[in-house]
Length: 416
Length: 88
Ligand SMILES: Cc1cc2nc3c(=O)[nH]c(=O)nc-3n(C[C@H](O)[C@H](O)[C@H](O)COP(=O)(O)OP(=O)(O)OC[C@H]3O[C@@H](n4cnc5c(N)ncnc54)[C@H](O)[C@@H]3O)c2cc1C
Ligand SMILES: [Zn+2]
Image (cartoon, rainbow over all chains, first blue to last red; front, side):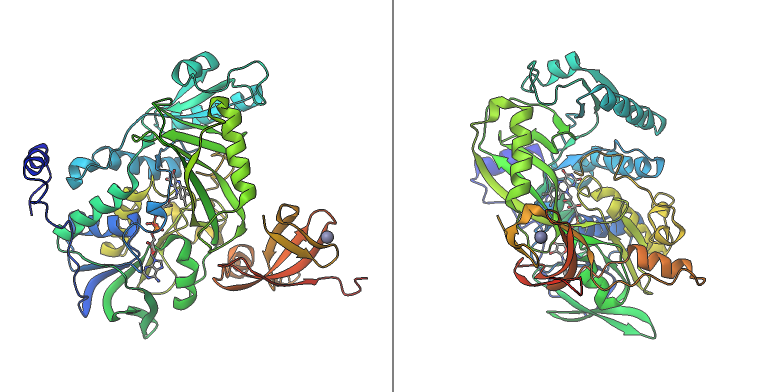
């Protein structure tokens, strides 16, 4: 199976694409693996990849109940950024941004990471004070940041509403130039292909239904395709984390909510950065195909139903039209929801689950696409060594007992 | 637009309601010494069940708290009960 290159694209163009091989195998599960990872989203697949790459552990299975990336990884609005407030978060998310910067080359798969910046808008003098505080925090954390005046925002995104009688006039923004968007499916597929090539078995359409315990330790999983033994188990199942926790017998401080997103009909290029407005609860970017990718806040009702509700839809889209009145007549193409795993402090949980033999990577809530490479990197470290990496330590579940929360919910404006 | 039943006001628009908490959590007796783990469990642990759930909701229009039973996948409402004993 060859590497992808400009030459292979050219050659296959000449022979009608007949030479492309399948990107990963469809293996029958073995009886035993050194590591079993539950969940074939970005975090599970990245974990498998980094186990092979950083720890030379290749007897690994990823078990996915549906299809690869069919969870939130394939449903998100693809914003990648590390403009967080606390040093612990900045270290975590910037590890991810740095890994994303080299990811296409690393995986030999174009994940289309486009560092087009993200402008967080301020709509009043007071907003600007808070944004300045955020700007300072970012700089102290070693993250790239710029404070933009209203005029600078207008130069970069003239489509925004700069009229005299705007409901929330734009006073300025804080921008992270290295932030941007990526291609969600490509991230899942790229990690899957690279992990498969290193020997990982990716098993789709296989649900983990229970845990096999022996002397208080988890020694494997019972699946819809039979029992699979494991040296150690990692769970990265996002919105379904509590369902697995209840089966294994550990508690998680997680509530599952639906988060919605929208895509418009394709338009000529009108916006070449990501814009977020906490005042409206809306954020938007334009995809390479021309569609506007629009997101907003959570549905306020705990839910496992993968579809949205009308009141939130109205809030988000009303916000969009107020931010960019020129879009009022634009039609939506699609609208969907994903089930996200929200923690009390809006920070993830990475570490031992509380049951021997099971480690978790969950609680990313509305913002774990940006964290896929780092989440995989850190869970792989835990599974391989049994110990935290320095960067994942603050995100251990013990913080809920010690009270040392990493409370990003207030600092990051609207969740996204 | 979903309609939720308030035990006091009857069927009303979902936007008038606010989810408060999972039902059945009992606050530990803090006049006694309680451990960090128990307190943390009380504060943070959630059952977060998939399927039938029992929750405390508020109908913001009349400000009454009540128990809503529903299905967390289909969003079907299975029942709503007043929390007040002497509701009239
Ligand atoms: C609408 C929306 C917009 C978002 N926008 C952004 C954004 O702009 N930027 C950002 O950083 N993040 C965003 N997010 C969040 C981001 O999508 C998630 O945090 C991230 O994708 C989580 O990845 P994951 O691999 O942990 O989970 P998932 O991709 O959900 O993968 C978990 C997998 O586990 C599988 N699974 C569950 N239970 C079992 C079982 N019992 N057995 C086997 N398999 C199981 C599921 O089928 C699923 O495929 C958004 C989310 C949504 C819904
Ligand atoms: Zn009422």
